[in-house]
Length: 166
Image 1 (tube, rainbow, N blue to C red):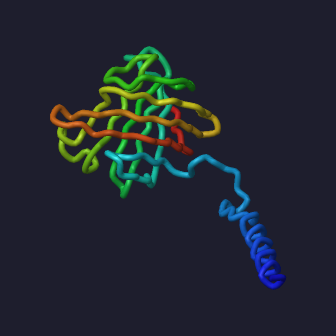
Image 2 (cartoon, rainbow, N blue to C red):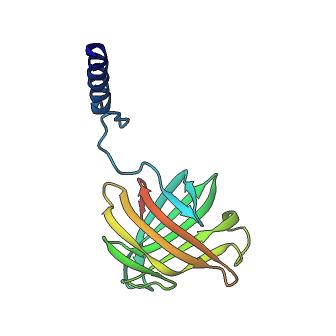
C-alpha cells in the first residue's frame, strides 16, 4: 500500500511540474503589428508583397489625400483612397474628406470593369499616418462590387513603409 501511495505521489508531482511549464512560442517578442499588408478575400488569407502610397492634394475631395497601391505577385490587388489624416472613413465610391474609396482588383485589373470591385460598404480605420516617416497603419474591411458580383475583403491590416509626396 505504501508503494502505491508513493507512486501516486510521484505521478502527482510530475503532473504538477509538467502542467506549470510554459510553452511560449513567441520568442520573447511583444510586437503585435504585421510586417506586411494582409487581408482575407472571401475568407482566403492573402499576404501582399508590396504596399506603396502617394500623398497629394485631391482637388475633387478638397484637401490632402492618400492613395495606396497594394501588389501581390507583381499585380495590383488593392487600391485604397482616403483623407490624409488618422480616423475612420466609411467605404463608398466618391472622393471627399469624410469617406474612403476602396477597391479590390482581380487579375491585376486586366479587364475593366469586370476585375474592379469598388466598395459599397465597409470602412478603413487609419491609426498611423506619418508622411515624414513614410509609415501608414490601418485596418479595413469592405464589400466590393463589379456590377455583377460581390467580393468581400475582411480582417485586413494595411502596412505601408513607402510614401511618395507630390
